[in-house]
Length: 242
Image: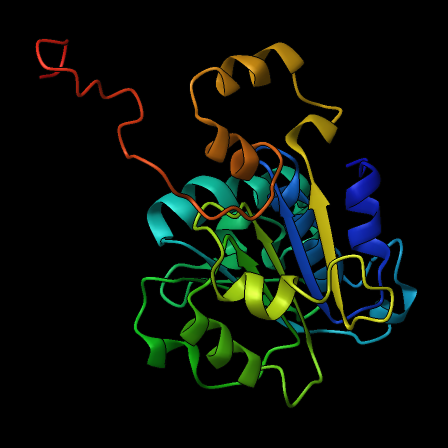
């Protein structure tokens, strides 16, 4: 794993609250996953202060379990984790399907959850850190913040702002972006800034979406979606639609 510029800023920042927003395929989830792995294994290359904590308890939450965790998050963990870091030396030995928890050889654990679970499922024991992959509902966010009180823990959100100007914009982005005195690190990244992507493929994708979606999905910026749903609708009598 060789972090690009924005990923390096994300990994090296000592701030406890991080909002990493960007376009699709800009490397947000990869950065979030490797950050979690480094913390769980106590081998963070940019934050030596985290390595002295020892065994720690983390939580990763995605939109849903089948499509978010199993199809996106798990492949990333399998790609970047080395087997010797896991309890029993393999994913199969280390992952408890009943509790959806991955156990590490050093005693650390990572619990995997999804936003479609009942709110009370997020209560209970404390965690040292929480990774939200894509934008969490406000109620889920608040419940998980309570899990970090005992440990004075950290959280990071890796997301593409496709939902428009939601509570994340009001409470975490606005007032913190480009603010050197902020306690929330806000990183913005354009899909085009990821040096590992094919530029032609990105342009082909952009040809199929409108300007609002380009702003959100490529530039990674908050936008208030508006206008007609069917922008090509022709209301002319006798035209192709009427």
